[in-house]
Image (cartoon, rainbow, N blue to C red; front, top):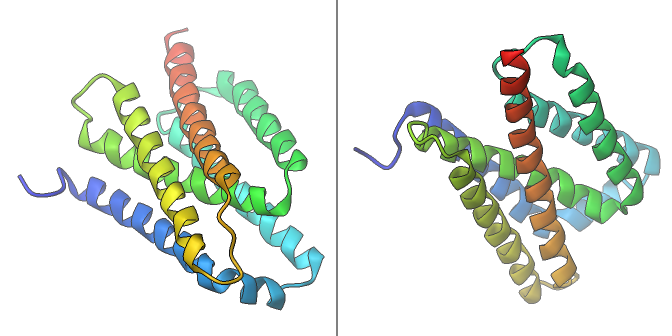
Length: 183
């Protein structure tokens, strides 16, 4: 057996790597790009678009098999929780939340695909959390060597929090789907 167990797993790892590339490229392009988009309305629109796409990804990941309209309230509740969280955060933390939530979901799905015959999704969830936290740590460590960037341990913690929130939301939606499917 090769490096990947299926084409789907290979595709998911490619997407995760693409997200990592975008995150790391922002170390160099972030400030010039932000200066180009100094208009706060443009920044707000891009942030809202990113949040909507992240929410759609998390909901899709947790609900790939339909369980009916019974889960609609669960979906709304999760969206409301994320929305309130976003409102409390500053712009830098919001971008971390988007980036590391998406990365965590792709890594989680790739690991779930790899271990799909294993009935323990928590193994994939824990490993995805650890991988995402390590990447978040590397992201911050690189900033030690870059001018105009600052190493911040709080960012590492926040990256891990974003991964935890995304993976636990996905696990919760999967659990709810199975629970409501039985009723």
